[in-house]
Amino acid sequence: MMEQELKPTLIHSMVDIAKQVTYWRDSAKEDWAVAFELVDGGRQRYGLFFAHLALEKLLKALVCRKTHELAPKIHNLVRLADLAGLQPSSEQRDTLAEMNAFHLEGRYPESLTPPPTAEEARGYMTRAEGVFQWLMTQL
Image 1 (cartoon, rainbow, N blue to C red):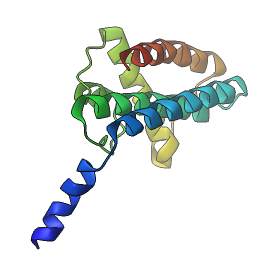
Image 2: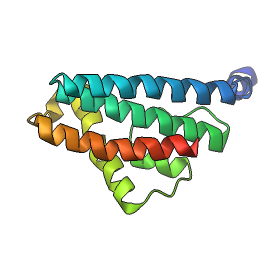
Image 3: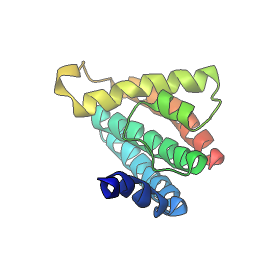
Image 4: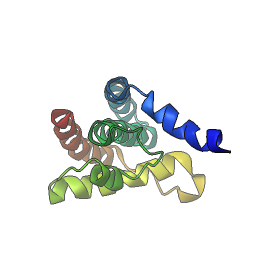
């Protein structure tokens, strides 16, 4: 029984946090590019899902860097920002909260709402890009 209790601790102690941060950051950059391709191609719902995913990954990189632990398996951007010890402006925090809706729509069909128009999607992407760039500077 004692051995089973130690396994999670041993696994966490063997994790290379720098590699985790690099993975999350590089993956976020790729997802960010895909988000723009999808929105520009008229696939707003999926593009905004990928934008949320990119923000989530940057936040997870920052959580790893701050805590020296694996990032939690959560998707709430505001919660991740808190765990990372960030101090986003009220506008940045509002954008993170707005973008949370696109995580739900991408994963849970019962939460589907009408897809945003192309103009609305571009507005979300513009606001999210400001947060994305700010998060990159935090790494």
